[in-house]
Image (cartoon, rainbow, N blue to C red; front, side, top):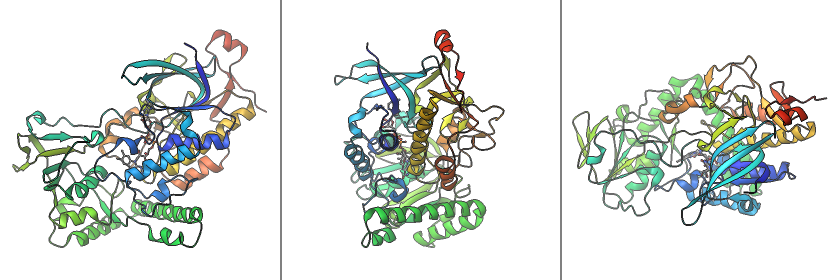
Length: 505
Ligand SMILES: Cc1cc2nc3c(=O)[nH]c(=O)nc-3n(C[C@H](O)[C@H](O)[C@H](O)COP(=O)(O)OP(=O)(O)OC[C@H]3O[C@@H](n4cnc5c(N)ncnc54)[C@H](O)[C@@H]3O)c2cc1C
């Protein structure tokens, strides 16, 4: 088997993978690269999720790429439009030619002797047969998202097998599912459930959202009127830039305000919900969360579509606990039984880092939970590996853009130094916090222990603050005492394990 070699291997052809390829082509044009993608199409999340109503829950002015204006008048955009945007970016920039589809990466092993990763993948042939593929690269850039693709999270619901109707998970939506006129229960209260409710209620007999506890729901206009107005007078790129900064500033203001005055913000949000649903509605039970705003994500609904579906009587919310499934539906702890033809388990994701690939450095398994994240991008003790993890309180792409540009600066610095490897060394810095802080929805709480940790101070902090990251990743020098630049020496090449510290000027 002849081994192919690339300077950079990008894992995943979603929003971030295409972002990374754009930055590499622009800032490191001399570098060869390949993208390995397990699916047959570009788009990641926006290709995988096909449930009714699938849309962004943050605005596309900040979720679009910094380098490609989002020109669609809808700022809260349908999944298909997002997929088309990502695909068009890849096509227009010739990135699609670098993608190897149907390649699932299983393992990456770093050799300090060779200053290279050996990446093992399985390529799925048209007949379904899987062939092993091995590729080597100098730098591995994980753009594999943050959750398991093979299946979503399904709690152990008692007696789920007794239900005689259909049970569906939004991560694997059946193309043939006909729910017109049917009674539907959607279990969950997150972004997926609040999207599904109004979308399915358009044709279903009735849709009930069954939640254990309420979530903050905020209505936002689907269209950004200010940016759409600006587009009439100036080039699309300018209007996009202005709209983007307006929304960044607004989001940061709202987030910081909510952190400083949680009770004030809580009261305001609940008042707004009451106004949408009318004074008769039991907002205290169904829309008053136990947590403070932003301790779990706020759910956004475009033009109050969820509230309208409830007011029209086509949808309802039940706040209770599941006792067990029955033949006809779900029996609740309150004693009530909800009947359904279809039950949708919008119960979330299973968190997964680096696309579930096993990592090794010089023959030793890397336990991600024991590493420290350097600027939220690199990992302590792991050479030449970066990964993209976006914001949880703002659009993912804002951080993906910053990380991709930072990795290019790092690669160029390595070239200038003549160093073939870079390894973050945490020295005496210890883990003091999980990768994600002050934000603990179920899917993060379940797995965050296995993710890299944060230290007490920069550069070992993972910020959820765009301006701080602009400073940390874009403006501050890449060179840092915590980064060890090195190359294999003659000796280490012989012995096969030593890395020699690069003597930098
Ligand atoms: C339903 C839903 C709605 C969301 N809405 C928003 C939103 O409105 N705003 C927002 O900012 N964020 C949102 N997110 C977060 C969303 O995931 C990001 O916006 C963004 O799509 C992440 O892009 P990505 O390319 O980093 O990861 P993904 O979109 O997850 O893409 C990862 C790619 O890597 C591939 N891959 C993974 N593992 C492997 C492997 N082992 N081998 C080969 N290929 C692999 C996958 O097939 C996929 O193509 C949402 C997430 C979900 C699930």
